[in-house]
Image 1 (cartoon, rainbow, N blue to C red):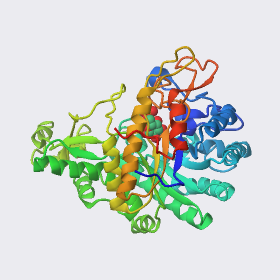
Image 2: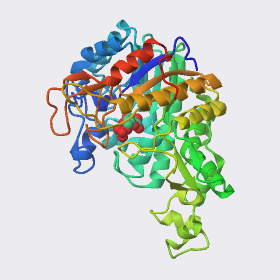
Image 3: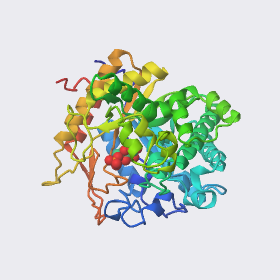
Image 4: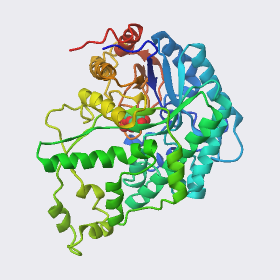
Amino acid sequence: MEFPNNFLWGAASAAYQVEGAYNEDGKGLSIWDEFSQIKGKTKNNTNGKIAVDFYHHYQEDIKLMSEMGLKAYRFSVSWSRILPDGEGKVNQAGLDFYEKVIDELIKNNIEPVVTLYHWDLPEKLQEKYGGWENRKLIDLFVDYCRILFEKFGTKVKYWVTFNEQNVFTSLGYRWASHPPNVSDTKRMFQANHIVNLANAQAISAFHKLVPNGKIGPSFGYGEVYPLTSSPADVLAAVNANQFNNDWWLDVYCYGRYPERILRLLKKMKLDFEITSEDSKVLKTAKPDFLGINYYHGGTVKAPNIDKVRSQKDFNKTDPYLMAADNQDTSPESYLFESVENPYLEKTSFGWEIDPIGFRIALRQVYEKYQLPILITENGLGAFDKLENGKIDDQYRIDYLNDHLVQVGKAISDGVPVLGFCAWSFTDLLSWLNGYDKRYGFVYVDRDDYSSKDLTRIKKKSFYWYQKIIESNGRKLEVK
Ligand code: BGP
């Protein structure tokens, strides 16, 4: 197990989750500023108005990064800080802020990795155009990206287009648990297609403007296992991997959707418009790397179609048509049924812990798409305890150690991994779980009810990661 010498040992964050200063220095509101106002949508109605105030603490935080020896820091730009209305006049103060952050990182030998979209669409674009359901957003996104490419293209080498498109389209348009608070499967697929086009157009624009840079999307990947070796379960896992993973990655890398899923959507009347121009756009844009966010995968068994059929009493002969009229029936019903994995333990937030799944994921993604991989997120959300001014987060060390060992093994297997950005550097706001679900190497003293004094305290894991970086992974413990 050997990590390359220039391996990017990093950490990651997102604007809404760390910055705060939600309405300062000309910033416009984002859809998350609005959504978090709806009672009951987030834990204890937490929001990112102050977050962990990276906006005012960035120098202190970057100093800690430098002390740790961090080689890369992934952060996102808030679109409405650059363009308060999402379009039109540029807010110079917003550009200045990111320039200061980038310069400070570079001064400390930390490679900035910039995410262009980590879910905080300018609210004005939602109000005026209906957000990602409108093709107008494609050009507007590219216009916004161009501003950043032109301004920072010489300083920033690594760029991420969209963070976890699979997550924000599903939670935003299907499950109404993210903005814009919609639950309509058909609208989700339509919006998702428009985001795909925006992703492709932004990549093409980037390649013209920043020929020496590298760009790719960050995808939330999880390998799906069959529950048993029964061929029906194995088929269900093939289906699930197509539906959960290939549905996005094939588009990013090959410019086309998996046929099996397209056919199913058509039968269910969940299909969406793909023009011949769209196909061309998707085919011409190629990412330079794939960003992979890995937390866990899934396990499935064969779906029980009879159960699906009996859910509705009309058109029993054609379950696809039936599903189209039944909001409760989903494409998944025909493809797989999710189950618990009897071999895996869970975090205190109920997420399966599966380090070997990480190695499998990296191998599968590379073998299929032949692109270098930048791990843009991986980490453990836990309730940390501050005791006598200290945080003993040995569980986080164990989690990261075991995952990094598998990354090392995947590298030995031949997967080109550019770097690893742990989620996260400081504690930050969890979108739906407030401030108690902590991921950082650095504790931030605040909770759901009060931003307190936002003191930064190094956790035990801070010193551990420092050691791992210094030894270029040689101090990882292979158990
Ligand atoms: C990813 C997001 C991150 C982060 C992480 C942890 O999906 O890209 O922004 O939030 O998950 O998730 P959570 O905060 O729900 O625990």
